[in-house]
Image 1: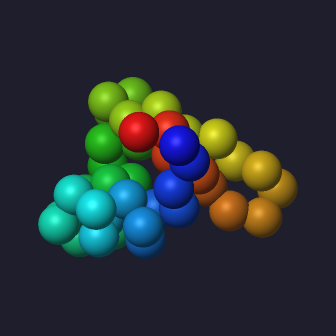
Image 2 (image 1 turned 180 degrees about the horizontal axis):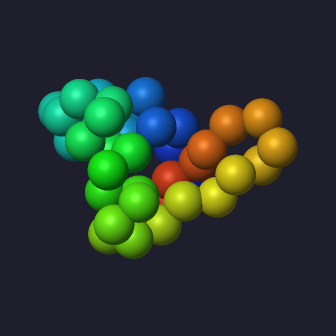
Length: 41
């Protein structure tokens, strides 16, 4: 299942900045499709 950063933040009940930080720390896998970042949870 792929979610946007915003959807992931809502799903995890955390701010979007936290999700972006987890992506940079490689704790959440992310895919950039040319328009937006999608997370594989």
